[in-house]
Length: 243
Image: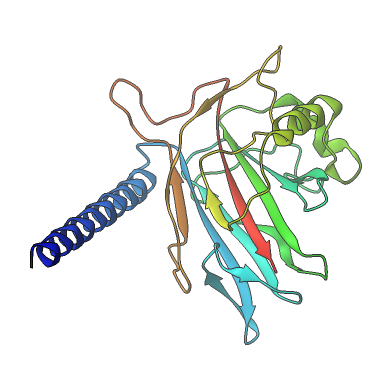
């Protein structure tokens, strides 16, 4: 009888802990969406759209994709500034996908305006692995990423490539898909004249058929507003698992 009581108490404690964790996660998601919608903090909305029945519908970014799946990435920011998207492919190659030389001379992203990457869609081929789209938010232009726009196929310059290689060498290959805001090997110099400061970021993940999509925002911590200052960036990754 005593053993049964202990097991019952343990089960209740476990259920209570899980409920507390779920409640905290829900609170953070609501807070993240509120910060983005109100504009009190810099943030972005991201939708992963997949073709289903001849139309593109929102899907859970953490799902597994297969050969032949056609997808599109749609995003918007809640501030005027700069958004850079670097593709880290399964073979380790890194190139700047957004912005591209096809855009106007100014690469400033306008608040509340929807952008599609690519302009149509792309299809998963036979190569399996995890496609990583590293997204860098900034209120000011980042010179060597702007220079990469002019390079053939958007390949990163030597400084950015070496920084990425150094950081990635100590980072295990990602095992899960979805939008990730922590433990990201940032493709940006952490020292020297091009050094940038990174800000933490919180996430409200999207699900299948969720038109609101996933939302990220900089937390408005006490004594520090959630808006980026010159020389600061916020970085997260979109990891698309191809099985």
